[in-house]
Figure (tube, rainbow, N blue to C red):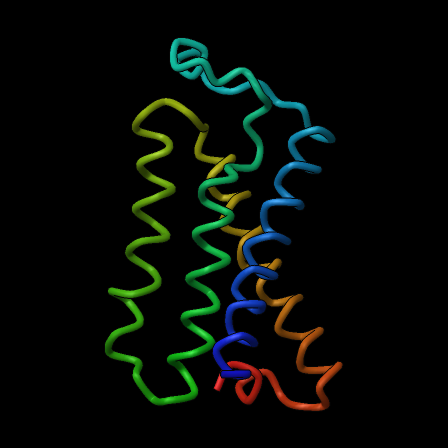
Length: 132
């Protein structure tokens, strides 16, 4: 049961750090969203895309889970395609500029990388061992 609970905390940590980082960056950068976003009631700053950051953080964790197991064939379908799809969808609906989405991808990658690095250092294990 500890492994499941540990994995749950790992997922929550990655997504929470991505969300917190996105919220702070939105306030610091304070860039307006595209004009169409106002019609959707989106009045908060747009950079970076929080949706993209959260999904990317989760998918990078999935990537860390699958790569050490040699399952490269599934990575494109499980990680890259959904992360790209969320980002593109946020642009298509007019909620974000392309740079907002790229910022979201970077925040998600960074958040999960930091959490995995911290867990690995605290536990004295390497990153692949953390997610096994």
